[in-house]
Amino acid sequence: MRLRVALLATVLVAGPAGPAGAGPLDEKRIASASVRTPPEDQRGTEQTFLTFPEWFLVHSPAEYAAYVRTHTPSAFPFLGHIRQFWQSYAAVSGAANEGYPFNFGYHVMIMVIGSSTSVEYALRSAYENLVGRLSEATQDGSATPEDAYGARVAQEYVDFIRVKPWYEFDFAARLAGLWRDTPLTGPDAIRRWERKYALTTEYAVKAAYGWAIGLATQASYDAAAETTVVVLDRAPEDAVRNTLAQLKLLKPLYHGEMLASVPRYQAFTDYAAALAFQGVEFVEIAGNRGPILVSVVTDRPAGTSWGPARVLFEQPVLSDPGKTRVALVVPVGKLSGLLRGLSAQGVVLEHVYDY
Image: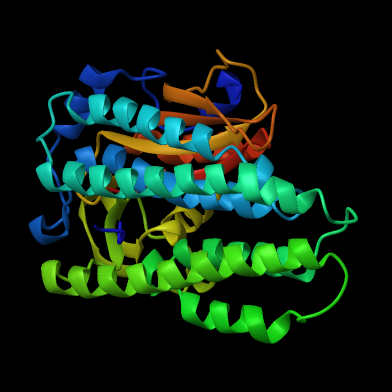
């Protein structure tokens, strides 16, 4: 990913035949088959696991943005999200170390972003639970223009980081908009000026930090690939291709299979679901035939059967009691069957972690 320095077994077995809930040994056996993806388009299997902590730093702001639409920030579980980040990192790190190469650079990057986010969230929790709660006590109960502005920017930020690096988000423009678009006078003056101070500090610090990270990233890393090369069991029909503008058919392979490219990051999830709904199966993704990580958000109880997938870990959605994030591991060849089953059961697909 770009961020450097997101049932019933009877339905889910609709994918290719094979043992349900394949374990790590089965996944490695599947992965050992002859690979058709060109070497330059292959990526390590361990990356499907190690991208989860990066995407958690998309999922967490998404939860925050949804929460502050109807709640004040002081009640958001910042400290719980710190705990969940490191717990999920431990889980995916263990999976990535099950016979796959140790990706030193990725682990270092995760430690850096995890540590910086932990500091940020700890400071925000302390501030909101002290100063934020005191200012809340002075308002009449309705959201101030500054609260509404902060909630709107939080959603804009989430929409942005689903497709681009966080440090490219224009915090400076949002800072200017805060002072331009919210009035200087009016009711709830204490709360409003406290929010102006809090948001000004947040946007200014992130604008400066993002600028520095952007320079460091450009100096240290080559531009990340924008696409993922896949092998499909067949070429999608014209009607499907017409709805997927970034799907490119590269060349036909043996037995009707098709080498193709699709966009990475959040768009990969959308494209994978669209292809699955049309009955297209994945043979390889970035040169991988073994495990791929998928996360869903569900209100189903623990112990639910997920057909061809095995559960890597579960964590409650702290801002939405009753919901659980479930991280599932499924062989690439059974990904489409899993996605069709999730849709049939009304389970929210959160992300497919495409290496």
